[in-house]
Amino acid sequence: MEYRNWKNAPVRTSLLGYGCMRFPTTPEGRIDEPRAEALLNAARDAGVNYFDTAYPYHGGESEPFVGRVIAKWPRESFYLATKLPLWQCKSLDEAKRIFADQQKRLGVDYFDFYLMHSLHKARYDEAKALGIVDWLWEQKAVGTIRSLGFSCHDNSAGFEHILRDQPWDFCQLQYNYLDTDDRAEEISGDRGYQLTEELGVPLIIMEPIKGGTLATLPPDAEAPLKALRPEASAASWALRWVGSHQNVHVILSGMSAEDQLEDNLKTFEHFEPLSPEEAQTVEKTAAILHSRIKIGCTGCRYCMPCPMGVDIPDNFSIWNKLSMFGQKDAIKKQWAAHFPDAEKASHCARCGKCEGVCPQKLPIRASLAQLQQELDAL
Image (cartoon, rainbow, N blue to C red; front, side, top):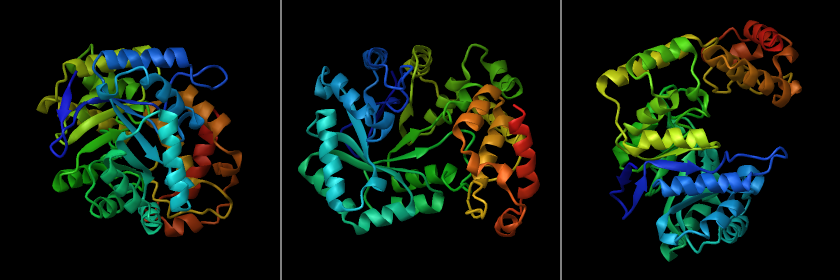
């Protein structure tokens, strides 16, 4: 197993971390506990020592389940990370209540890594005004938190605002070889990574495989990778790309099946950073995927709210995903069963308000009509 030493703390983490958001589930939607526990034990036996959960994962069931599993392990044999859901904290007292509840759920006296969950600038500023940020530093001072950080879902400007405001022990970002541009609303991209290096803040990566989409590539996009390493999985390329960045200390993977765990362990057992030739090849694959994008929406949401209730960026996100990755069955399920009808493109009244404020001057109305037709035809 590949390990990374932390310069700012006596910590040595496995480069592969176990994300506890996507455990296998039963037909009823509950965590399949015997199978999930076997996965966690297998990961730990293979050398994984970083386990990441959060208060809302699996409808609130992840923390209690993880707590029952780790109770059987020596406490010093692993690092535990969890997160404070600030959107549920309208006061400092509410944050304190949730924090205490997490200690009970997980059965621990201290958290190795504790994160303010899913920050953007406004959410961070509100938490700071409520006194939550100062209180968390107090918890570090008394030892209930060993390392304090945050996960971020903001662009590079919002991320920089948060990162520079405190002497953070670490931070957690979305980062993968497809989302390197910092223009999108919830992605800090290459600029976010560079900031962590400039400020010396250790980085933990979430969504290295882009929610699983980089694990199953269209044949034309995967062809350059297969030409170099025919036996390597698409997921392994995405993980190696992230792990080749020097300031990355943990790469989280939400492994929900045995084959995913096996493939990831193979990648990290004898980890190889990308060679210059391999890095160029990954760039080719990314360029092929980007060329398949239907509309260059960055998700900035300047077009929102739509007077008719259409979620314009989310409609475009699904449409682009279909074009980039195929996966028609998965997209059809998302569109038909999980995307609210009231927010679909069909409700567009072609008023043009969105096009008047779009920074990129995209043909939103015509594109909404086209995507509705294509997605309905799946």
